[in-house]
Image (tube, one colour):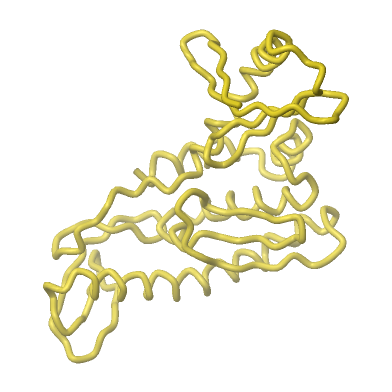
Length: 234
């Protein structure tokens, strides 16, 4: 069932299910949705009271997940448009060519395609270039940074990449870390922060107090860099 509570000026919507359990549990998902699981004998008033008690934490988690949503505005892929690469803005310059490729020179990302007016072709060529740059760059950073987390895991973590719509990175229960190709547009420090963030999940696969204490210990400036990432990618 669906329910909601008012916390100050914020309305918190959540899905509620009753099950054979002893305590109430609250989960905040990356899409900002909230799921509450309560013991069968719980009254709706008691559930609302407990959700309200955890409202501050819920909002914090929602804000945290939201900050990791790639927010780069939709691009038109035309000459003169600005595009990011490693935190710097470059102008897009299109050239007609029988051979499709991308070359970074000066303050420009030069894209060579058969038809300059074919926006899809330009977009695909640019994505290919970003992907190739990301795979090399992320791997170098990951090899260096994972040494700080040797005590976090038993098995060697693996790194993979993909285009993501809602996250900069993720870590699963098997110790597989995934990074969003879009992250190659961010400054180096921001990429390092996301990698370290995910490495910390090898020890705590949640956003608990223990997780943030660990993150603070291994990367004291994480809040500053996280804020920079949020402001850079808009």
